Amino acid sequence: MDPHLAKEVAALARMTIVELRSRFAELFHEPTRANNRTWLLKRIAWRLQALAEGDLSERARLRALELANDADLRLSPPRGTTVASVEGEPSTATPTPAPTNGRLPRPGTVITRRYKGRTVRVHVLEAGLAFNGKVYKSLSAVAKAITGSHCNGYLFFRLSKEEVTS
Image 1 (tube, helix red, strand yellow):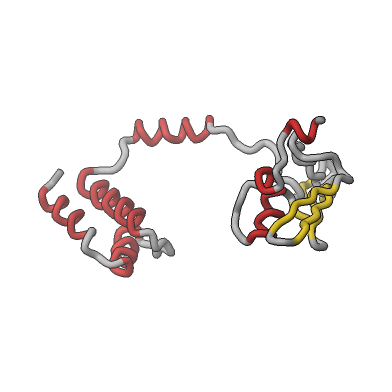
Image 2 (image 1 turned 30 degrees about the vertical axis):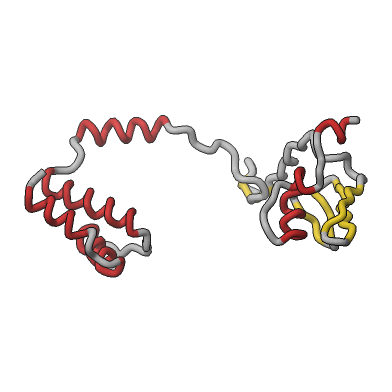
């Protein structure tokens, strides 16, 4: 690496975020909204090196394009989005039901647990879990609503596969 370039890259480490964003705008001819110091340092150092020593070769560019064309792409639209049908009329894609976990009791079951002196009751529904008038997607979400912190719902409600299947 060129000694002048090495000094310039080393000087980047002493810059503030505002100065790094300004330097990024100078080098890339566009502003950035990034505030991640590490990312800015890497991108600016890469650009300085590319300008000083040359960018990717044409062969490397063609190979990258070839790899990008072979990349796996999403073949179906996300759940619940509107897609155009064959006739050109918009239609709504029907969401597929989430796979059920074998540890979760059957719909209609009421899960109870004592927590901090009160009895907590959760109703298992076809499309989630009802607690305090709200429907949650998972037991962990219910446990978080109850405790205020993230925890494993199956552990919080003391559910195991053996209890549910028996």
